[in-house]
Image 1 (cartoon, rainbow, N blue to C red):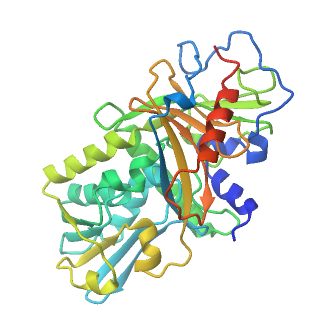
Image 2: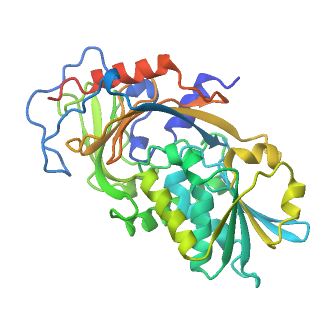
Length: 379
């Protein structure tokens, strides 16, 4: 069984602006701190800060997703596969949306010099979709083979804040991987920044990362978060000793994935519903280049015992346009609030090796009660 230290380390590593929050223990709401009542001057937004309306009576639905987590980090590599070339692009943990364009660019680069520009992509999560678009932009013909369309994938239920959350265990992953992670993050952030707007459901928002431990001055991905400022005790409206504010991109996954599907189809790409049960099925494909973007499916299909599910649970409330910011931290475990146009999303959980697909009512109650307490000092 994976111990609690690994779970905590897995979630907090690479948490974007949340890198500044040092541990889940440090993020716990302080029991003896009274938030300041004076008007808080927001560093990015000029609108007044209002508290989200959080109530168990207003829950629209609860959803569960399984992040494809590898302590050693995601896999991007090519290999000979019979008379085909197989390119792997999977295992991104909680950073799939954030790293999508970057990791897929690294994967596409693996076959940049081949002559036959025809590829099969297995999987239609965000890695499969962004791989397809990058190939199409380079003149390739693509066919996506998928067990289910994108709206049924884990990518669909991601929170969407740009930050390579829980991508790897830094005590296990190699220096080579850490360099690869930085390359993917740089490409992905630049690409998303050029796509900001309603068409793809991407916008800039204020992010507050709260905790009781003084954050480090520089995080792993600090350069991607403008307007960063650290507040100490009594300087911010949250019931923790410290809070770091910054600006971040929020990707509304429902809009983003739907638009990618449209773009792929408009550029001649096809979706074929097909479930691969063995590698023999892959050898039967007509395409000479195959991209493996199956996420957790790589455990069974490609015998990767190093990949495991990290169960996440989200509570969805109706959207609240007045809440124009995001928060991470402040709970006894994983806790965040992402205010989007389609929903207000409350999370969450990070349970390694938990394959269960049903929401846990105890976790739902915790998320609701701790979120209410976290915002209790804001009117």
